[in-house]
Image (cartoon, rainbow, N blue to C red; front, side):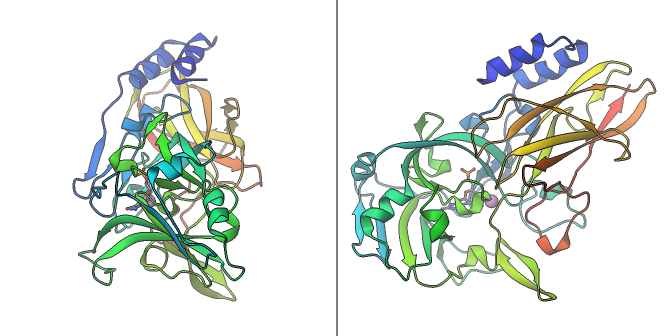
Length: 379
Ligand SMILES: Nc1nc2c(c(=O)[nH]1)N[C@H]1C(S)=C(S)[C@@H](COP(=O)(O)O)O[C@H]1N2
Ligand SMILES: [Mo]
């Protein structure tokens, strides 16, 4: 189902009243992006613009730690080295010659929703727009690793970007470094994609042209853009972006222990109504949103309009591919009394994990999946 079909099928539903028409109209005149930081470029689009299973590239959030690197396509080489039998240097033509593979996958920044943390957290204050789904096309990382021949003692691969820089504030990088993240070998040799295309077009410069990793099911920080070097290593990588940044506390043996942020946690977000929207009292309003979980499918989404005292099940749209979100809708009979109201959505995934109602401080400023109400005005 494409975006237009999604809107059309919504409009055709029997309960589609005036309030639904209002909500859908808001989705069509798409609001623009919000620039969170100008240089390096960081931007998101309001989640209220959700209008189908795929996020258009121009509305897809951008999260960059350093300026977008300039890459000469003729001179570009992807290096594969470290604990391999045969180091490789692959040109763009070499990459295009590999067996093609495509995947519809969600990317969510580990800091998505950070603006809702209280007390205020450090880092970019994302609303709910640092998440999106795209169709990615390229070759499987596995194919490249097979060509290079992974040594038996390798445990991880480091994915390194061509972008570089240093942080001005704490935590400080050791001078100028390149952006890099590692992926354990089991993940690297199963479903990680090396993408050259996004939504049927070559990657844009901001999204990692000419080549990026897509690590499905993991928060976005692992999907390294401007991928230029892959290093197989025989011990876990302790790089900046998985120790000082993008790491959280896991309780082990009664002690909080820092571990890298990896899998996306179960979450649902309300797209419409949007924050502060006025709803006509007594009308039927089509509440819409999406739910996702890194490791598995979504089993259930529930809505509460009474602060969590009671929950009603939302209707799930048809299931997409393994790594995407599940769109949902719920027809809410707006109360007859005017005043402020709060709507909440909570998802449960196929493994039985339900979104928590409160924030876990062990997660520092990442993995923000507790239930966050949307406040509306009934008038
Ligand atoms: N080389 C490189 N790759 C990167 C980053 C970066 O700054 N440099 N940011 C990461 C983070 S934190 C996220 S959330 C995703 C965002 O991908 P997008 O900008 O295409 O949405 O890219 C990841 N890959
Ligand atoms: Mo991110």
